[in-house]
Image (tube, rainbow over all chains, first blue to last red; front, side, top):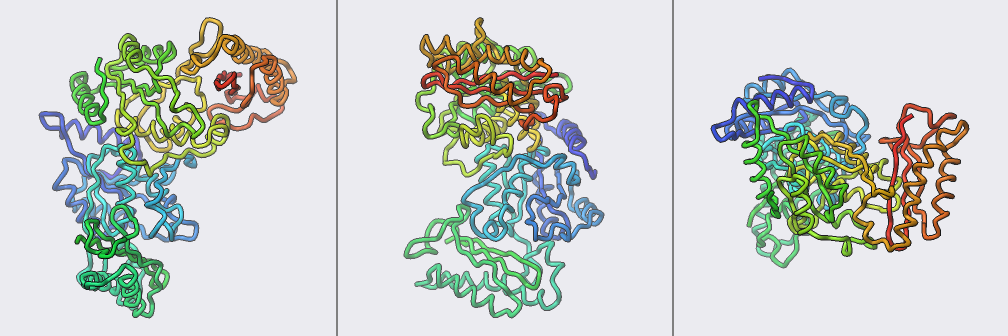
Length: 292
Length: 292
């Protein structure tokens, strides 16, 4: 495995690797997984999937300042490049790209990839500008790596919807692969931010995954409405004294539109139940997508 | 030469052509020229240049609704695909891509490539949203064609600056080639919109190129200022009774920033003198870039 910090070096290494690994028809499949680093088992499972499905596996580690708000945790976002490199190698990556902020933004960028509508809700409403930053950096990384397949975890379900949208709208020739959220044995969704939680917060954070499991039973009740389901989930989360709800939102997926109709959970559209809740200073997200 | 209307067909034809034309090192150079069609000698000279410099030459013809304002000439923009195809073939194109609006926008796009600052001035100020439409469709076309070099005429100097900017900001692996404006024997810059001009307008429109030539002499005067130069040009254009000035603007190029300093035309920055003037219903643009 090689760790590479310069864009031009990565491009030329990938060009050579593509030539070496191409089959008789000249075809080669490049898998890519952009990360903010501080990897956990969730990241590793995506790298392993890319390894199984692709000839060349590229992982990027870049804490992108553009997607953090001025009051957010850009500076204190956890970083551990050495550990990440050894985890990525263990999971089967061929190249890890770790650019500096100056390498990615040699001058302040004047260009933004803006995705409307999908970004007005959920984390987009709580974190203005966040998805502009995500869409812009992922477009840049796609242009640098030029992958055939890119792997994203469904814990950030809205992020996946946004990336699928701009990829399609801009005709970027990459297939977006949705990967299931990995969870700790007790159900907590894996996240680099889990390290921020103290013991009490960690215990109470379980209410997120539990309320999502409970949601499945509630949705099966004959006269359940969107409003009632949301209220039930809110009440269950609020039973954890440290929980401060940012949002509990129920939308169609991947369109992220309001769920309507008299039997709202019996339609053809997959239903996203998405949560963002603060425990102390740590904001956690979780979600599930239900198919009728 | 082949005319192709579907994105997937173009991709697969180009994939095969790349393989066929690659040299021993697997290298092949694709040249691309996006147009709105209704070609004139200016387009042809770009296609010929691409033919000289590249192994595969792709031309697109697409009148992009996104870059026309609601009161602009999208519907009546001149179109003549048959003539264009024969001109493109004559100039050496291998593939002409003529997608329908539905092929390019199967659903209303939620994604926009936004370039700030550079687009606040000149045609960006007169045509709100125009450069969002240009940046978005050119990004799409670059992702579809994946050219190594793309050719743009300098008559749209601001467009070239915008395209260079987002290409660099988004790390799109394409080299933007600036191509000199072609002119009629009497000096009028070639434009598809010139066909709109009646005889009087056509004659009076010559004041544009003449005032740009005159600007060069004025700039050489020892105490010439930006304000004085602009005024001189305005007066000269207004001497044509049918001319209605949209803008006469002097900026650095390609930064499109105000020209400052006591000897403003003796700096290191190239200076853009840009004009947009209506003759009857037809809005014409012209410009020159001066190097000290």
